Length: 286
Image 1 (spheres, rainbow, N blue to C red):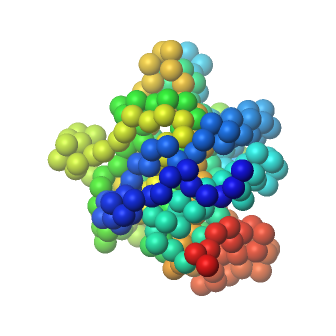
Image 2: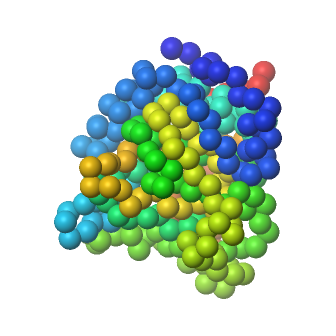
């Protein structure tokens, strides 16, 4: 296996990412990479990290499982991060000179789970700041557009500071020491009610197959990805990538996931470029 993409990312796809903040890229990963991630996810679910938790559990026992930063103890995730085309994809769509890995996150919904992810942006939760960020969202099973993650095109250029959802509230099992955010006194306005009139916001999502991926800027408004039929599950692996202008930032509103402690332990401080073995340089244009 190598880091080369299965196909060339077109100029039109790069322009779409720049304009809309999101682009769906079909056929970017072969079946071998999907199998590798499936094996890694099976290990992850059996041996979750301390950060893991159930985001949703209904009366029928259907769940939405989330975990983050499991890559350091799951070999299949490491293989994907260092050897797959993911970093090259991020570099291409962001037109970046260098790409560092940030962190991984997985989302596993059992068949029929009705939980829908609240609309939010990613960067306000993160311990970094910068425009050149990219998440690669990969379903490991087929997903229909009505169940896939949805986006508001162009919202990554919005200047307003939105009042973001506190994902720490998604904790039906009462797990302790969950990361929290509180935008009181910081936010300028609430995120609009996008679900009330998605057409007016131009909301987009896609039917997808394993091997397809969505690349999106961390500042774009996104949500959904749920309300599954009773015979359908959803398993998603995401990887977060940092481009040229990203610097460490510790936020007074809180961070989720909060990397400030481990960054400090590794000698990283606000204003630094993320690096060390925590956030390795994976790809460069040269």
